[in-house]
Image 1 (spheres, rainbow, N blue to C red):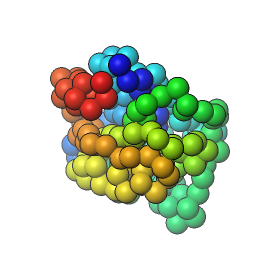
Image 2 (cartoon, rainbow, N blue to C red):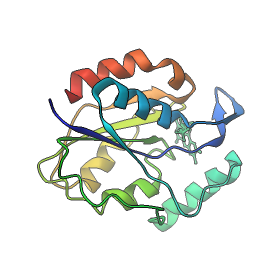
Image 3 (cartoon, rainbow, N blue to C red):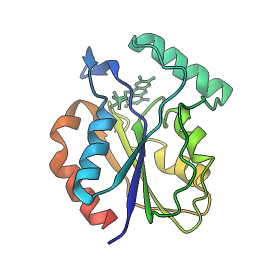
Image 4 (cartoon, helix red, strand yellow):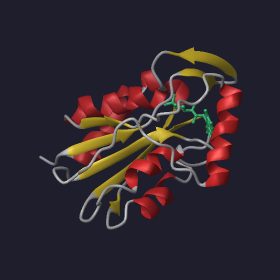
Length: 172
Ligand SMILES: Cc1cc2nc3c(=O)[nH]c(=O)nc-3n(C[C@H](O)[C@H](O)[C@H](O)COP(=O)(O)O)c2cc1C
């Protein structure tokens, strides 16, 4: 059986859910990442920034926009050094302005993806997979980009069945 790793970023705190702001104890992407791990026995690696993004949704939106403007590489609390033991790498994150949070790129640029298969997973409030596959083509040099999975963030907790089906079809 193929060995899989899920690299994910997920923000706790206030989030925009179906037109309203709600406080989430666990981020949407983290819920989905755990469903993938349960489905195929994947390992999990959480990307955590040294400087946390603001709890307040509207402030966070501005911080994320600033990252884009600066093409930032936010510093992480810990780094993954190698993905040598894995066949499949799932890169899961929330859609931030049409792509992944830039902290994910900080991590991806440190890894050697030669011969690996990578899969975009994105939670979102309407943008679907947005630019996730394009980002993986750019930042995971040498990897083949496989089928992605988009999960509506507000439905993350109810997505176990769909996530499991996708994981078993693509990662086994
Ligand atoms: C800074 C920021 C930017 C966002 N930009 C988008 C976007 O462009 N398109 C979209 O559909 N949702 C956008 N969202 C909503 C999130 O993608 C969605 O709520 C996601 O499920 C959050 O995942 P998380 O709880 O794992 O962080 C944005 C949220 C934030 C905080």
